[in-house]
Image (spheres, rainbow, N blue to C red):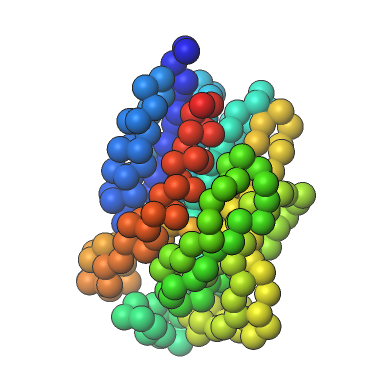
Length: 254
């Protein structure tokens, strides 16, 4: 099999980017035909243009016009984009009040108003809010080969609440309700099923999105706070790893 160029974009403030980057690279090492490059945003247009597959783990990284042109061209020619966790999150803080939740201090509520609809339309969703870090049960809701045969599993993660921006096939779902005072959209009182993984056709290409994947290290909340809570979230859970391995195999074309 010919080399398959995979470009990993890993840059997520308030997340343990170094840990996640290392885990992704270790997992990709298992695919002998994957030729991997790494960046922390979407600015390397040459790498995107040359890529067969893209893996994105970002937070509050908003591609500009030229970068969106490159991403759209990548998908138009049949590329595969695997976007994880907060890649669809574009956030800013309100001007107070200061909030502390689960040991994390923020200067105001998180406002998730869509500031880049072209990007969220390409991804197929936008992030609205998440509940506080907690165990959550994840169910397979599709017979797609990406998830076929995977048993329901429990992970400790941030229960993500998304708004789908276009047609998508939901693969994983989790049912929950609750609130998080750190968000403008704080209250979600009615239990309902929330997409946690989906596939979306874009031109000749495909976007695969996985909401799971939070991790944070001791100093990842700088400059908001000097030290914050350390969590590996779902990264040490077998169910999450099974989903991740299949997603990376998919983006590598195996």
